[in-house]
Every structure is written in C-alpha cells, then in structure tokens.
Image (cartoon, rainbow, N blue to C red; front, side, top):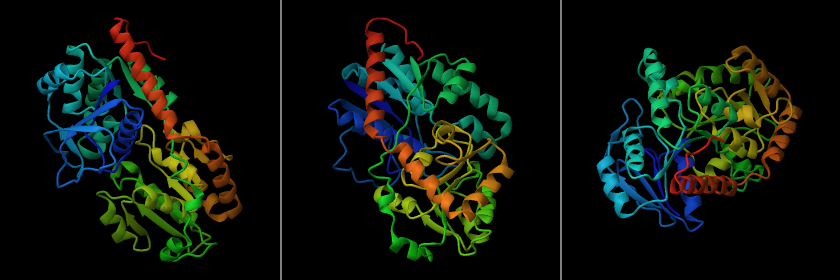
Length: 386
C-alpha cells in the first residue's frame, strides 16, 4: 500500500506520540509499503537518518506556545489535495489534532481517501495546566468534532474506547500498544551506571521517565519517593527527561539525579539499572513508559489508569492503586521501598508478563486495520467500530 502519516511531532523530538508514530511509520516501511510522513519542519538543523525507510514531506509550522520543543503545523489542505491527487495514498493516518492534522482529514475526505485518526494526547486535560480550566469543555468538543470525521479513531486501551464511545465517537477502534522487549530488558543493568549514581547493589533506586511538566503530577512523585526512601536513607531517585519543571525540582531537591533525555540503548540501560518505577501521572492516554519499565524488570507503581489498567495486575506484576488516591500511592511506594523481596518478585513477574510482546505485533495490527479501511472506502462501505 501507499500510506500517508500526518503528525505534528516526530523524532528527534522525544515524547510518546513522536516515538509511537515513528515506530508505526518504520514498521510499515519495513514491510515494503510506501510510507510518507507529513510533518512540520523542525527548528534547528537535523541531519537525515540514513537508516530511515519512510519518506518525509516537511511543511511550515510554528513552535507550540508554552510547550517548548514541539511544533504546530500550519493548515495545508490545498497543498495536500494537490499532492495526494498526484500521488494518491491508499490510506491516511492522522496522529495529531493540530491545524495540519485537521486540514489533512479534510483533504483526505474531499478525495475519498480512507482516513483514520489517532487519539494520543488528552489536550482537554492539559487546558488547566497550560491555558485555562474553563476551556476544557471547548477542547473536548474540538476533539470530538475532529475524530468524528474519520472512518476510525484508533485508541490504545479498551477503557479509552469506551470513554470515547460514551462521548459519541462510535468509530473508536482498538490498536493495542506493545514494547520492544529486545531493547528494554533486565540484561542491560549496569553496575558502572549505578556506581555513578552513588549506590551499591543493595541500595534501592527509583526512576521516573517522562516529561518534567505540571500535568505529570510530579509533586506526588516527590512525596512517594520520600516514603520509598523512609527505611533506605541512601536510596536515590533518578529523573530521565526534560521539561519546564526541571529547574524547580533540581533547586528543591539537589539529592535527586537528573539524567536529561536518554535514547535507545542508553534509555534502556537507565531503566534496567533502577529497581522501581514510580509513575503518578494521570494525563496519558496510554503511557508507553509503563510497558518499558515492566520489560526492564522493574517493580512498577502506577494509578489504575491507561497502560497500568490494561497491563498491570496488582500484587502480581506491579502495584496498581485507585486513580487519584494519593494516600494509597504513597503507601504503596513505602511498601516497595522497604521490601527488597517484593521488588524482585514484582520485577521478575513484570518482565515475564510482557516477554512475548514485539513491535511487529503493533505493525501487523496497524497494517491490517489500514488495509481494511482502504477496502471499505473502495467498496463504498462505512467503517464499523470493533
């Protein structure tokens, strides 16, 4: 097939959407599909990666206000209609709901091209942190209008599918995420890295991986680590990522280790060299980091939400507490911190739970879904929710 993927974020930007879209594009291209990623031109010089299989069409964009490092693409419906009239794709996947994504949906519909959207980010929940809480219903209405125009809106969890269906998006379809268990593995544990963190083999290390931003509930992460370290004065907290909260966190907690952005093998080594993953965020639609931590053999603590709701079994391969129950989260962090045998048992079970996962499964499901939507469009049949 010839497939167009439209996204307003893409590597070298580091976030869950960019990495997921990149994995989808490269996965399809590796199966000999012709894949073109349409995205905003990123700020600064970026040398093309010679190993990239997917092609890119770079369009004008602008920095996203109050969210440095990310960009919005400008509307490009006329440009895309001309481009797709000359090189017609069998299907279009629109991963982001910005101006470029919106114009891509309109262009695809005007040309009767199969189009699916992805529900990756809860922009409605971000309103309180970056704009104004009063605008949350406006953002939710925009998301509903945007995704309703696609043949299908792809979601990573059954719970999100049910939520969107209740919002009137009857075209929601499940596309389950996986994790690269060859990259993220306990085998990457590094004594040398732990030594740089100032810990020995018996000292517990907690890790956070993600954007250091207000919507991530970082104050609870700090509180939970205090409980985690209550009986381990030498315990360390390693923070992987960047964001607007880093400076304040570093000033308030000079004892924390800030590793910055890590990629590929280095990221996997950071995960595997820790002992527990404390993840208090409720802003994700999924949270790839939960699966990455499980694959790395960590004892994972998270709220009963998104990826944790789908993949963590409380007391078996992780600890999962009711969404929003801060006291329960802190109590569970204390439990993990003071019980080395529990950490080891949960980490081993977490790895076993995801052992069979593979990026190939996500690519195969995505390929089948786009092929189905293209066939429905060719035969004039409406997409059906599944």
